[in-house]
Image: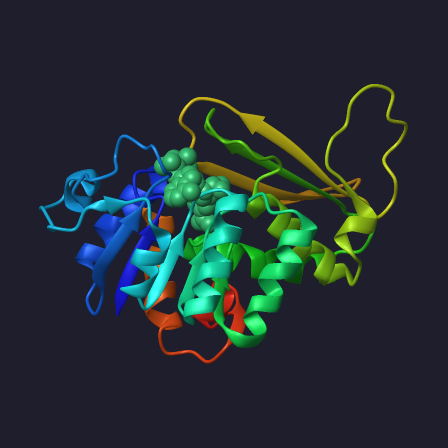
Length: 266
Ligand code: NAD
């Protein structure tokens, strides 16, 4: 399986390049960076902190996609959308880890899944995907007298909030309650907010230091509080999951898949 990495000099990109090199049945076929990046021309192995590969970073996504069976993209929403259009025109499968898409962008990605293979997950760790299933189950069992609050913390460089994983947890909780998240969510509280509406799903966002990613969903009733927490200590868990998804994607028919599909949890 020839795998290319978009945004290969990024925090996740470097990890992904290292994971592809280490994975059985996978071969690193290229890596891209933004035009003007100082990393254009750098060896992918040097960036990944592994051995030299003889493959250098390019700013031509088209060139990389032509040489690639599956592209893994952890960049930024606009960049991923451009890559998805290009990958669709070449029939190349795509694994997307980018977060912060608008509803319109998500709709377009879903449409690509009609004809192409897309695996999209806000979080590629096995633990978080298990947490999503448990969140849905807990929300379906615990009624509206259990208030649902989702708290997340990430490093100071993160640019979107709430995190894609927190929103996926909100979606899982909403699915468990058979409601639409957009109709019941409170993403920010500030000032005189009034009492908490019944059935609401609330979010709280913390940012600081080098925290890789921590998520808790709370079910808070009058006499008890039930919490499910996941803490990622190392980005390699996301990279390993994404490479597993890329190898899986290579043998799938068209579809818009999640990591829960890859892991067989869905
Ligand atoms: P980062 O800023 O370190 O990396 C992004 C890289 O993309 C940068 O190197 C940037 O130069 C590059 N880039 C920008 N424009 C480009 C272009 N036109 N072509 C090619 N490369 C381009 O960020 P990061 O921490 O690696 O996170 C990237 C994304 O992945 C974020 O949306 C983040 O939330 C998400 N993320 C997802 C998971 C998951 O498991 N799904 C885990 C961690 C991070």
